[in-house]
Image (cartoon, rainbow, N blue to C red; front, side, top):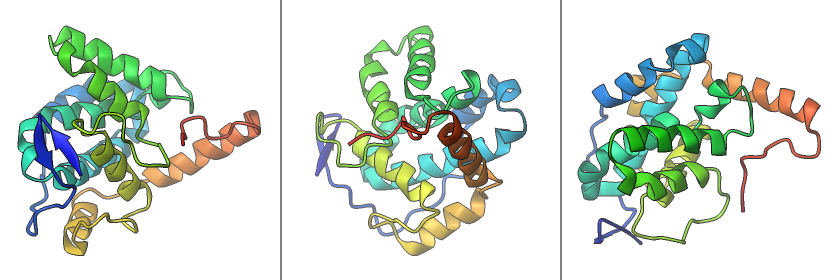
Length: 196
C-alpha cells in the first residue's frame, strides 16, 4: 500500500485502462535533448512513454493529479546515459531533473522526483516515503525492462497495448551494448545503477 498526496493508494490498477497515446510535456522536454539522444531518440521516447503508462496505471485513480511528476521522472530517469556518456547515470539524471524543476518553479517536487530517478533500479521495495510515487515508478521501469514479462497486476491486454503503441525500437539492444561496454571497462562494477 502506498500514499499519493496524502491519499491512500493501493498499487492495484483499475480494471479497464486505456493507453495514454501522447504527452505534449514529454515531447517538449525530450526535444531539448534530441541532439544528445541522436539515433536513440525514438527508442528512448518510447521507453519513456511505456514507463509513463505503466506508472500511471499502477498509481491508479491518483495518477491524474501526479501526471506531470510521472512524465518529468520518465523523461529524465535515464537521460544521463546520453548527456554524460556514462552508464553510471543516476546522479547526472537527477541533476538534469533538478535543474528543470528549479527553472519551472517546481522545487517542491525535487525530492520525490530525485527519489523516483535514484531508486528506479532498486531491487527491493522502496519504503522510505510511502506517500511518493517511487514504488510505482520502480515497478513501471521493471515492467518495461522485462519486456512486459513482469506485470505487477496490470492486465495482460493493457501491457500488450502499451508495447504495441510504443515499439521497442532497439532500446533493449542498446542497453545490452552499453552493459557489455561497461563490463569491459569496469568489470568489478558493471551495473552501478543497481541498488538493494
